[in-house]
Length: 321
Image 1: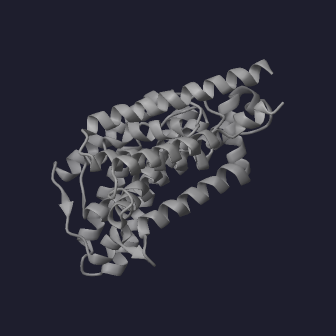
Image 2: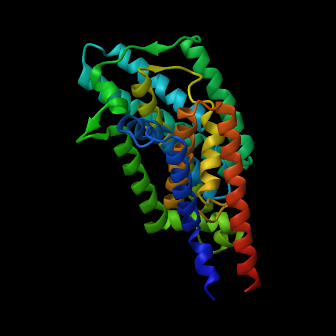
């Protein structure tokens, strides 16, 4: 009866794949892959996608999906950028106010998504598709299609600075990952999210307020988008309505690759982190080889399909036992 343990430890499969990918990239990029500059570049690129993936993951655990995470991040980032430009005379107060506004905007959009799903009864994919379209349009109207840029050095530190040689965005991502893990594994709300994803009807009859849990779920997802927005605008020193559009499908890819069930009820932060590192290794390795980004995307898909096949084989063996 050891197979159930294997089923619960899908992270092991991912770790093996990550190590193999790393070894292949090291061999293919002899002398270039393990350089300080390349590793530093990966450490700066990973966090914004990682934080967005955590926001996608928490919704998928409940059996839903959030297609509006990028639109939410852009709307929150633009709001923060407008505050920063309006309060250039008071940098410290401007940064604090911008951060607060960014999280308020993203959290409010998250709550709006939760309301549509939990209380109006719209399916998650349609509800978040609607809000994605809505806020993409609002962002374009607010910015008139232009880029808002030129922030103070203190703002740029969030996305480009280092603390004791460790990229500050990476520290933010680590903090978000730890907080998400604690939420999912150590709190009643996290336990309820898994239950809703496994069987929402049974969860309702067990005395859990499903609608309240879903509201909190989309709130957390929205806040993740807000934190990612702060990293994005500070890293690029600008805010724009179209930033990060390519990230949407990659967040779903990273979550599924990390062992998050598309049907809900299962997923671990550790698995998602390993999948993100694996995708970053592939991306950086192929970038050094000057491989087309389109081919890199295709290989990401191939890796995801491979992992899903392996996990499906494991699940089949578990059921037979």
